[in-house]
Image (cartoon, rainbow, N blue to C red):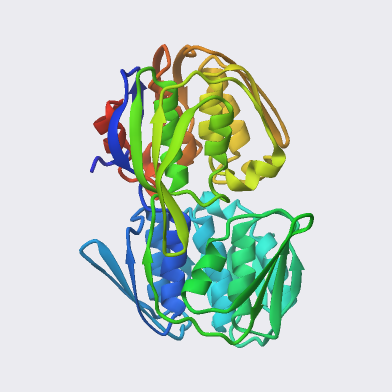
Length: 440
């Protein structure tokens, strides 16, 4: 596997063809490790994403007492009662890991300090800490950001919480804390967001009540005091990672590829719905269900795209895919407007600003507002010939490498190291399909 260090350059390529896979889903990988560590017994995980973010979560679970080892292609997790770690738990750049483990640690009744790199320290943690404090968690934080310290031995009381922002991470933290709370914890999500936590809690033996209201979202209830039972988890391919390959095929003339065993949970598939609306030839073949999650093989062919308006209500189902969607939009005929995407301002980077700056550098007509992005495509390859500042953001890096594959002149990214957080084999995958990405 190529070491993703320093600069990478993407050059114009011919058709992309072949059958490939996407790395394991990051959201499910995090949860598999955390839930396995909470369960009393042995759980087995196959297909785990072995990227930096997920490996940070594995290290965190070892720090709270779980025995975790890799055996061939499987990960064995021996969980049970958590213990207070000897030192601060460091999550690098992983917001998912940090937010979920803060909630789980609160529910487990242990004290701990949580920290991350400079980028993660700039991301908001107050949205998690606020409901946890209402449950009785005593937490200190630096202006609502990492480092965060929670105190051990606090009695937690269940709460009724309405999510003000669609966030699976916040919802998950509350539910995990609710496992250790007295009473029934209820979460109301007016706008539906990822439901991997609910699906996996059920697989690990936790009883939840889920009620859907067509006009008022969804309500999840969980009785405190429940313990998880061991379960085996098979991690499907990550639809967010697969989207980079899919868009590359859609915008590269003559391309025809299949990405096997990809998660197609409807709360994660918004980017594929949007691409189809733009005219992309994308089909979900061999649909099936594994470990409570729907999966399929995604077949993608080159297509002529047209601009569309992407409604704000779709944002939770594709929040990580807007950078690569913007690349597709740059090749479309006409204007694509993405609405309700303010959450992109507080990701690993300000993704709206990073995408806009990169597209402008490549000669694309683009403008933005606080919660929207507009891309005007010309139905042809943009000029390119730019060096993109990735802002230490893996999705910005991969998105502009995909654009470099069709641009008139090469596109270079200033730093590739962070790609390993979610897609360690990205360069190898693209090269096997026919892409041309080179290092220094």
